[in-house]
Length: 314
Image (tube, rainbow, N blue to C red):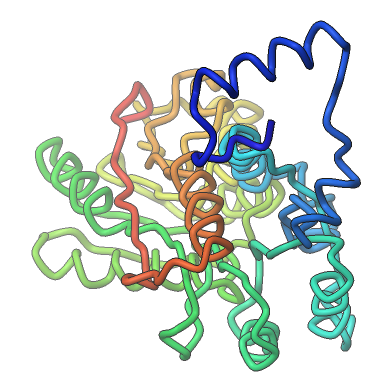
């Protein structure tokens, strides 16, 4: 019944048939005790992001959806483990969850760049994987996006359409993804005759709206494109344009990032950069399951390419 390869298939099938007829179901608690496992994976996320719940952002919900799909066939389930940024004893709490067999391992998403949680978990030899972070310890398993190919494709399109100015509304620089996105943009712009200017943002619709208000207080020309660090900010930018009768893309081209569902709901449809959240979530679970099985993970730093999607906003 446990699927042991030592039992002939014919015998196993016969036993399962008898068990089904008898209405037998394996006892999960007994299975956990016998294997010394909880069959739970903890997804560690901040309790709130920019004054909203973490799962209001499609980043976290998209990751969770793919994690559940990857864990279920392996008889594992996901446990959501929120924390507050100002909690000093988060690593000790997480370590206790592992020690008490509440979860077998952790996937951490949404950590700030200056977080000491990864280093402390590594010192405690807790099995975990990071998504969207890059600590100094290269032995920690990390899964991140590579925005460079998508940014280059975006710049090539802008050049082909004779856009000569680009306004980049950045994300929250407390996070690795935001800094990496900006760095890649700056590096790729060296190959293009496009003048760039920078504005601050924090991934919220409100910051996108504020960026639009500030931008249109200037006398911008029609050869200007605006690249916002995520689609939520692009939605706020669209809102300001709608309220002030500013036509997209006739007056200004707009590009987002993430490829959220909202990108196809906005009118005109938003050109954006696709973030491979589903693949990242799936890989994190599959890799952690290999760690549970005692397999050596040859590669500890995974990067997944993003790609550019042209729609009607350019």
